[in-house]
Image 1 (cartoon, one colour):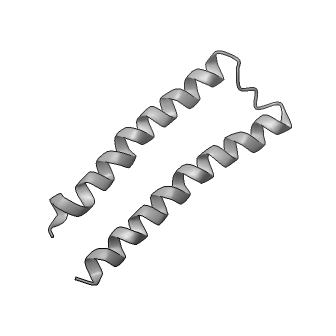
Image 2 (cartoon, one colour):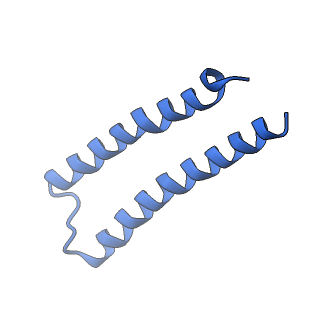
Length: 70
């Protein structure tokens, strides 16, 4: 398998998805639904960003392991 079949979909998924994620986060911040002055909101924003990068890392790791074993 080449780059176009393995890594390009990954970059598209987390690139376009990341833009949508950041846009959504920006919108909830601008509408006042998210207030970073609240401790619980700070906790949830960290959970959201950690979750995004954690799943991207796990996905990349599994792609790497899958193409490395073939």
